[in-house]
Image (cartoon, rainbow, N blue to C red):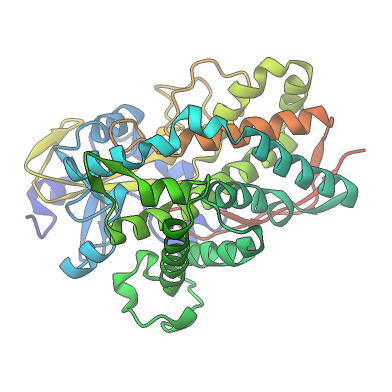
Length: 421
């Protein structure tokens, strides 16, 4: 495995900084990504003692995503930083595996996330959404994240998982601390939540992961003893030809579902409604023509790009965009850049709810790691826009958004909104 930049990287164009958390304090640095896309070949981004190849164009992100035999998720995991061997194994989850392990895990849990199974929960999603919107309308104004964007997806995913609603605030708290782990401002002590595990062995280096693991294990034990009609029961019972999820596999999967099912959809809801408030003419188009709801959802996903990047590691020497890459080097796909690629999207900096050709990469660039919860996220966003339209709800921003200074999630901590009379 390569342990240095190598001759190719040493001679390659250097990338502007897109990894420092402070760069994201005021939003995604789209100008820097545009500069990288315009540079022929790949650019090399120094990082720590080594660096990575930055993949910023839509087509090359697609190629990397669909060639797992060349660009591995298991070798080195999907973090920007390197992990020691014991941490690699302790933190390995579905997104950090290659075939055949990934194929096996995905097959075991895929049934729970088919469109048919998720569609069974549409009434629940609609009920939760309507309640939150009515409360916001009654209040007249408030923090959109706290009032709607955060509680909606966490209540939905927790209801599907079978988590009691009274525990939702606790799991939102844990999820927020996980996001902190991607910033330079963590606040938790290493022994928070009774954690006794070295944080480097925990996802996001966060003791909140210990708490989430513990909660998931306890809920799983309850469902083994008393099965219910929920996803946790489906996961603990998941079997294929006698194969079942091992305890650590279940634990890591529960962790992913709570975090991804909450944080990423929350981000899309927040950025989407901010965009509709900032472009009221686009929201008016949806109000006038409900057939634009689904295209609007796809545009929100492109616009928001909740997860900004994922890393792969080359399994051997290869070439991409005319750039020679050594084996064992990091290759990082920047979805936020691919979703603004001028070669693919007409007027990519415009928010257009009627965008027809919209092959966005909000759920990844395709291939075996396409987001397992993509259909659920789309359902939540579709229902949200439908319920907002049914109420004729128009919103305006009354202050600036407070963003998460993270290079991994395009998060927003708060944004004040008011109902337009």
